[in-house]
Image 1 (cartoon, rainbow, N blue to C red):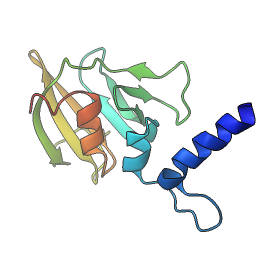
Image 2 (tube, rainbow, N blue to C red):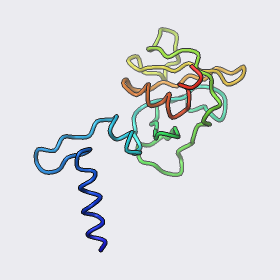
Image 3 (cartoon, rainbow, N blue to C red):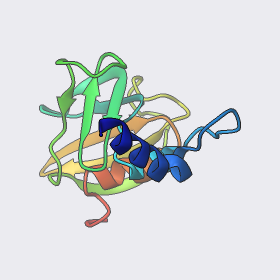
Length: 139
């Protein structure tokens, strides 16, 4: 019976991921929509609980963003508060940004009350980070 269930699930997911030798690798968008966690380089600069001012890894799902010093999910991952940030600007790296932010990264400049929070990360993830932190509702 379990085998039958797995066959049904695999068949349902086939259009998303494909199967066999000609299968294409799923896109970030497909993985994100399917509820998978995306992992990519990034950093968060700001007061606690946000601060991780060195390059690390962001673990992103549709409803959460965690930062960890390692690519693998483990107990060192720290989740950022969702819904508490106000987006000031989505932009590219600028001269004068903290050195932890890569020169070719995207940056979300946010406010938490009086505090500035910078979230820097590899290109192409801006829309996903905005959604996870519920920034699109406020921008």
